[in-house]
Length: 378
Image 1 (tube, rainbow, N blue to C red):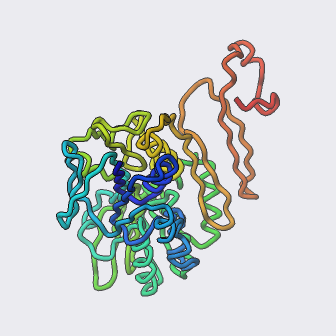
Image 2: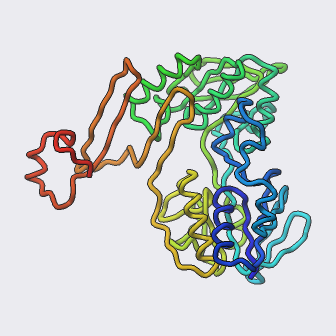
Image 3: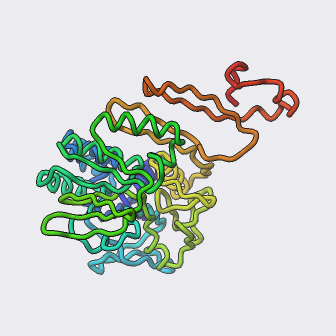
């Protein structure tokens, strides 16, 4: 057997591990556009803040690949997949045959539709080690910078730049921070805490254009406000890498369509991670990519395992703030109850959503005034 994995992120690496556990003899090749072995992407803000060195965020070093008989090809671009002849072609025209192929191509940072954002030098995103090192170098030349995006990565990156001594203004399109993880009340408490740390926020703000004046980048908002800096950092979500799959005739919608075995519509080709779409959903989070990679690797190497989805779970990694969000906070269901504990003066906000057990009929459910008193967490 010849196993080929395109992508060296968490999905691709976990798949390689699962394959090797089931098959200790066959060749495993991983092709990656990155310049480094598998590293922890969630730790990039630490690298940005110069709290760690590049090697510190490596999950596996080069010796690990040798020990597990995994061939790692870095700085490689796969240009073409030939499903009929089961081979891939690299940018340098070299070809490799596969018995089983995994597309763990991940995602790129998305850029919002802002005039001038694609062509302006000095507009950065944080997705790779290379990005972090470039931004850190640029940050040494300035004291102020705008940051577009008040999601998890935006807040973590903003905090990292704050630690480097920059005055940051974070511009968020929605009227609250972490719109996918927090409701309005929780967001107010978080905003207050982060303002106390020195960060500035413009919420419900729409960016209009990016312009340049000498070494200064000028971000103009639709309300007429101007935010300036030596560079602009954008953290506006991700865009799955599906171009390679699409060109090969693999079914794609928003992502690469897979079934519960992580199989695509083409025999012997699998997909996992940020690029994969399962049951109409794009997860875009580390735990889902990790589990999907394991499932794909098991099935590629002869096992029978099914993916049942992942409960979304995200944590804000900012010192002094303990914030975790799990599940779907936007779910609209009349059977869902909630418990809330809030003390804004102490920066405390806890909210639990739950559904009464199905065996409890509607009449009995109405007789209970709160979840908390009944100690129910269905």
